[in-house]
Length: 329
Image: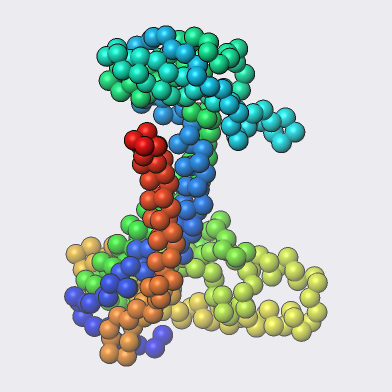
């Protein structure tokens, strides 16, 4: 590896560089995309289900007589495409223990009520707005719809993991000492990106005459192999002609030579060298003067987080402020 001078710590890292490391790397962007997509279904279905009944109907409950004021079919249904059943909204009113008139709706697929029927209403004494017809559900959908939450949950986990990793990157780039690490081992993982297997590249380095290791996860010499994975090469050998086989052999030989000589810059915590990272390939580069330079486009990075924030503001405003406005008017 060509020797590169790296400025001594503490080093400066721009806001754009820090933002990229925290929210702009692939895992973060995938996380924001998955979360944004999944939250649409969360707001449309989960927030309109009776999953939160454990909160609404906890504490001091009371039962009273109410009356059904209207019955209407919603635009929602349950079941498969060929066996879907419409969900009905049953509007009702009742008087709470303070003599105040309260109105609400319950939902059901099958029921034996008609407009004007008297029903038993269960309500939260401390918060009478939380009420429902006994035996029916308080939300359009049942609590089983909660499984939809798995999608935004996966996205949030990806964002958190990427954020924690980004904090490590920022710490190492700003206060870490540098040393040259030599490739020690290449270990295949079960992870694939764009059909390419990801490998753990283990580098060894020495600090105070003690050896440590650092790991970089990436495809195994993607450029040398022209995007081919070793497993794919072996499986495709029979369909290749002599020229192809000769090229593969040369690539493997070059791979072996390069593997034995590969070196990378390691950033490590001087107080604990086991806390480290391989410089690798990021949007953060080292200039000729040894400074850290950010090559990421902040505008492109901020699009997906901005979409998620806008989505949250819109749906939260719609679910909590719009009903209040309707009641007020």
